[in-house]
Image (cartoon, rainbow, N blue to C red; front, side, top):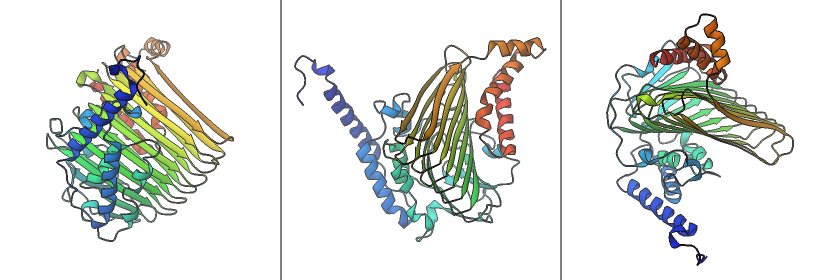
Length: 445
């Protein structure tokens, strides 16, 4: 189409789009040029090659992309990790009292010496880097990620599939005797980490996966979860402590009939965190809950936290919940982009979405983009988003009963986060995270 002769060339939207597309292609090729497919199982080679083609076709994300306009992806996509101070201590102390199988990764590499025996009743576990040539994960690795690229491009996830250097393959064949605890440690100040995990929960089986730690200064992780009929997958993740962390994570899930999928993420600190969640309810009567709580303080360095969620209802009588709460202060910034898509024929859908922020000063910011897209006529779907300060009346009530001002503010902050924490089925895990939040609030006074 010819440009409007009355429009200056510099303002021509077609020309601007063309320049943006070229810049995106050039940046993508520059990033890919020094890379080569990592060593790994032969059966993953085709999936890696297909993922690389997806990356080239989509291009790595840029601020001009619809779902990246609130988050600058440049520090996640550029060459070389930002320098960060290595962490001391043990990131696995979260859930430290839980009887779980610990699987430890140090800067994105499996550490067998720090990990437990990979034998748990009801579960088969293998390392991605040295899995057998014929493996059950062959049909799943990269498959859910590829399916999740429609209708929204997710190039960082495709990049992960193409270049993941390690990860675990978990197959639950019954009710797992213990949770699986994936512990990420960061010791190298300039390390990148690209981890890809695959979980298959067989019919009627159940497993819980815990995750803690930052893994590296810059972290790209993908988790694909296939939940069969009447199976259950529980996931609780704590991202914290490392102020210099830049992380992009993506979770892709597919649910069969009467399947249950519940995921909760707590995020504390970090320069930039982008958590994407893509869930497809493909079997009747499935249930999917995705929740998160983030607390950020811009005084410790920049804090930008982005939750981007896409839930597709493609079967009857399914239930989904998205519950996200963010507490922001000292110029911290929070983003929520959540969508519920109800396809034609997905009658009796029950979809709920809420995103809220508690802004503890005038410098912090919360950006929300809730969406509903519905093609069935017998559904109950709702979404809402709010931002506000601590309730002055509630604060006055507590102060009038002798509660010190800082303690009163912390109590109200924890009460604000409570709805998200209630999404965790295991009371002990929820209590542990509640304690961590209380400790963080006390330290940040």
